[in-house]
Image 1: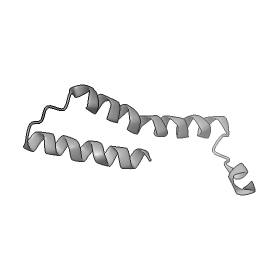
Image 2: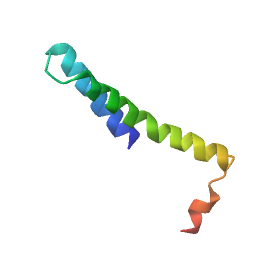
Image 3: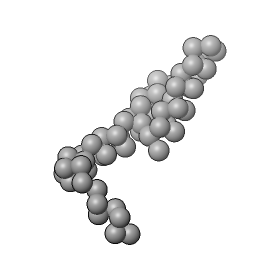
Image 4: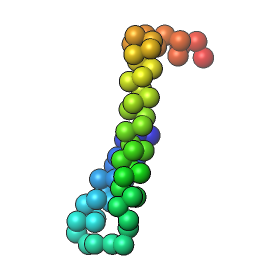
Length: 59
């Protein structure tokens, strides 16, 4: 999910460089936060489980 949001963010930023719009800067901040959040959650769980995600195979 984070990669999709990052792709949309990059595309929106490129379009903004080409043609200015009335999109507030807070949009870009929220998109950046939305793309970083899944990465932070992944790192957190990786740290807690020490990289062992064997519990995913039980489902």
